[in-house]
Image 1 (cartoon, one colour):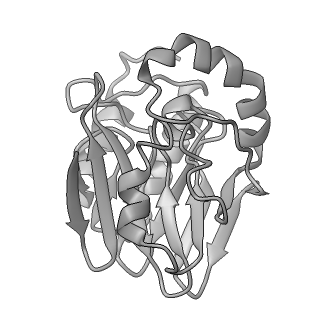
Image 2 (image 1 turned 180 degrees about the vertical axis):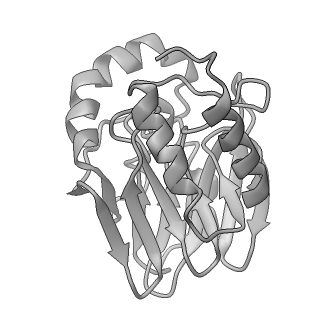
Length: 221
């Protein structure tokens, strides 16, 4: 596992115990601590809970989408608030057993289904911490992104691929929907981008990738 400080209040935990890197991102806000995605189980989250320490601020967990490698550690912090897009709730229920059966080899500690307590459709904002959650369909229909306006960090889940060689992700939405999401990223104010599995990117890196995707007609719908 690699731990890196990002700007003034972010910490990136990268797990390298699987076939791909897995990123979990923490923001220490004024009012809340925010954990973005929870990895492969409660043991995967132990480093994060140790880092936050008992008695720290209330924790908000954010699931960027319903896929198993982003939700299996949801129960690690019992008194936290779990947030996702409204579609994520039903998608977790519909896919839980199948995802667990197919990917059981990746389980890292206790894995129990926990559904979001707070869901939203378009946007959710925490003004005291200047954290914005917004719907960005593409990789999945329920995908969301998170903008830390204060630290100028954009977290985009799996809306880019797992590594620089496979930068175009699998899409559950059509390419037109996905391209609209990519274009929306170009309008935002940030200097650092964190994806679910890829390396840390600058805004310039991400803009280059997005422009390449938008002009590359070789990708199927």
